[in-house]
Image 1 (cartoon, rainbow, N blue to C red):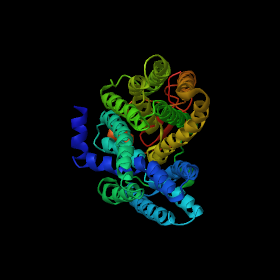
Image 2 (image 1 turned 30 degrees about the horizontal axis):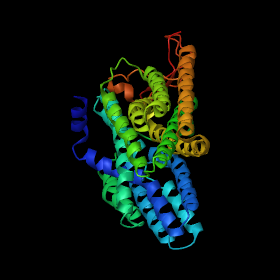
Image 3 (image 1 turned 90 degrees about the horizontal axis):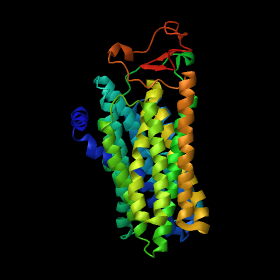
Image 4 (image 1 turned 90 degrees about the vertical axis):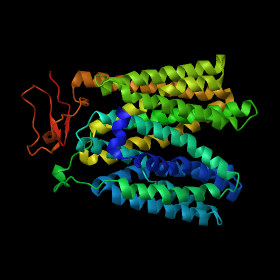
Length: 437
């Protein structure tokens, strides 16, 4: 029922075009690696340039989000797609020259990367609010998590097929996807901002720094787990002398995660966001424990398949909490800050697990995933206990169905004396930290 309602709300064309629009993000790193390795003959340089690109994505994402909040999704989305297309053209041209222009162009590709995934989640949030169907947001976020996971299965497979034709082919195909899907998606479906920008700096809503920092660190942990598992399956494939098996085994991780993410649409509404966050952090730890032990006593493919079902529910809880805690006028930058933690964590996870895998093989890489999952669980428990103790972290109750509740408050902020709360901060459709003592 939820997914049929999403189909009616967004229209049939939204889903296939939206999936294709996010594929350039999934193909970018591997396309760059293949292109630059073929151009220079150096895996070390290609890996360094690809890492610089990932860092640039983490830096450029929040910048694009801030511009989106200041202007609108359509203008910034179109500009980012065009700029990224031009950056890929520059990278192709630089691949025939010296290394310095290649490195700079690779970083520019990351800096201009269209933020389809984060911004489409903001689009869903505002769409369900405008239709007064807040219950659909859970299904929308579940779909988006599944679409992301499937894109990271389909994208590398697509690149691998094209690379057999020419090392230039993946980069050219990425440019074609930008022109044929990402740009049209921004033109057709990205909304224009309807809220009025604050006239003075003193009225500009602030992002809740500590809660957003928790979400960012939680996403860094998720990225580090991805990086460690990628390293582990690569070592496993090399160990069995079948390098092509790495992609197939890691595809299991994405497919299982996508199925679990789709199922999250049917979680009951009384299962609050903070409780989901802690619960799914615990299941993520359990999944990584199963992966670590199962890889030793059973087999890596079987352990990966089982552990994959614990990934997407954890990420969906992060997206949902970030959507709820951010002021409506800053939702895009908050979501892109959250997503910036993914590539940073992946790079760190690959670097750390790679060193341990040199000495301890698959177990060394998976130990990193297990350790990071334990840290993510401790972070979730700390945030949950701090919220219960002080009542100032986040109010995760559903927004009121009254449309008037979504209008920015014209009253100055003041302590909430009616309920004896510590503090009340009223922003457009947000009420943060108002709890009974």
